[in-house]
Amino acid sequence: MHRLSLRAGFVTAAFALSAATAAADTLPPRKPGLWESKVSSAETGESTVRQCIDEKTDKLAESGFGTAQACSKRLLTKTGTGYETESDCKIGPISVTGKGLISGDFNSRIRIETTSILTGLPNQKEPVTRKTVIEASWVGPCEKGQSPGDVILPDGKVVKMPAASR
Image (cartoon, rainbow, N blue to C red; front, side, top):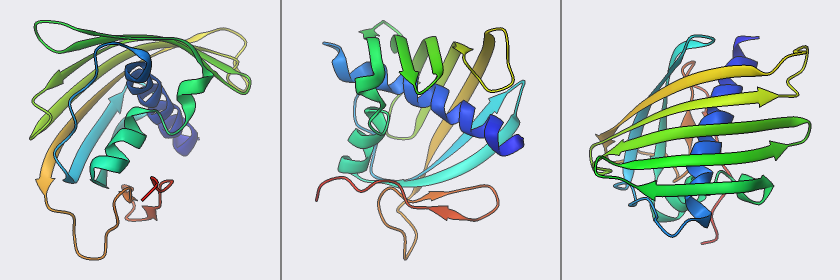
């Protein structure tokens, strides 16, 4: 159950980031290296993951790992304090309508706040509203043996993300 909720939190964040790919405004690239992200929401509590990124995997993350084509609306607007996102997306039976705020310098820190309404979740008759906050910080160079895209989960397991074309 916790793993499903955690996955839903990451899907929500991916939708927020995927809004950037179709917009005139674009997010600045993150500094390459190891990023630690603390993901928190009322439903899942707090989890911390680390990801080794380079320019190609950063672009892949921004595109929502291929979810961009599942979105009928993807807006990213630069503001005086960062970026606002708005998206309507669908993956299988799940629809997500969301808004987000992204701020930070993209070299040492990023903050993402999203509010999403999910419909079609298993065992949920009514739409579910999820608020998620991601606080990401640059830790340093990727650790020995890590490949760009590797995600280190809270339990230490490493998930290999889809490789960007190299």
